[in-house]
Length: 454
Image (cartoon, rainbow, N blue to C red; front, side, top):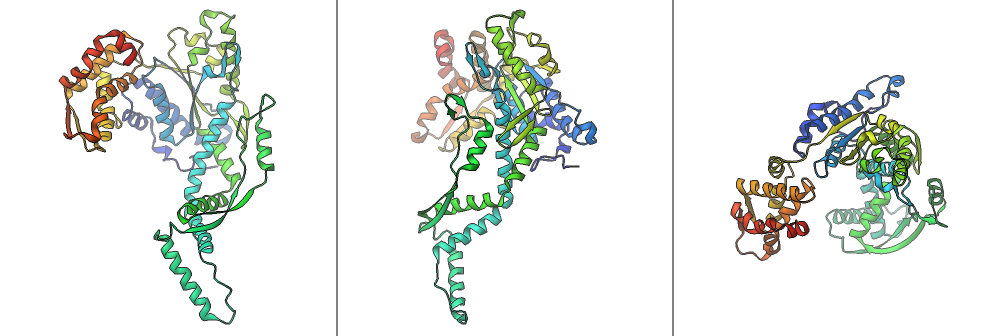
């Protein structure tokens, strides 16, 4: 049986649901129900790989719909989950696949994008694996360009030994970077790239045609003069590509996309028919749902790297569902998202925790950013409470954008110090409640300014 783990991933066996939730807690505050649901979904992927082959193919992922307003962590949960499993992950918006009176993007493109991402992930890992050998080959080609001794007679051992010593000296200087500014002439090979999606006569180029054209185009070779430092990277890339087998790369990438890929479909509520109507815009919305259905249900999609089955890709849908409801989706699509979790709107205390607790909390980000200018920034507890209070007030009075409101408030709060930081004489700054009130209180009170600025 094939190794169940994607190449280069952490040990999936150690990613228990409890461990997954603990990892997500380091970046996302609250939303325990959603975290538990995605943790079980990810763990089930490892469990499926332990089953016999005949049973494994019939165990399908339990797709999830996340219901909640914007800015409460839906996308972040899915993105961090994919990072834990080292899995290919893309986010798409359902509303992009059609507009009223306009035919949108091909729904199959989400699978092709996932495969492209998977290829890049696998290529990066394969490149790291062959990099030492590629560096040796690139150095040899550079030495050949830097040192071209005349042929030594077969019986002149002393001449050959001198040439070897000279080459070895050059090799040491090359590794020490002493030759990086010297100019050399190297042979560069390039294959013209066919840009995906180029239109021919108003029609989008198909995958098969694109691959065919790329194979047919001849490799262009030319000699270029550049510095040793520049040519080192060019030659390293060429030698790395020679050592990576394209067929193995495509095979591994497709396997990873099929078995570990995650597609996050946002704005799912925007394509739900409202109130059971079947005319006007709702016809278009239902059409997108029916286009999505075979992808989520399981079908074969042609990509430039080969055929990809979508049966075991994990789909996570998301939307506010404040007008439409999940039950407004067509029954067939509802059945393909058996798990539904509701994410709660954020309160002041949630904002306080978001500012303090995550590993990448905003207060930590600003502290480190300003530290690069020599500014020692400190936030008092009452300042954090006040910022959270203002963010909650603005969300209640205007359109709620969840935790994203903290970014606009913090940016406005620290605008002056961020601008003056390079020239500031006083390198210490304590942000307390008085500082927050001075910079934000009047702005928050003025509802018209709040709508435009915060």
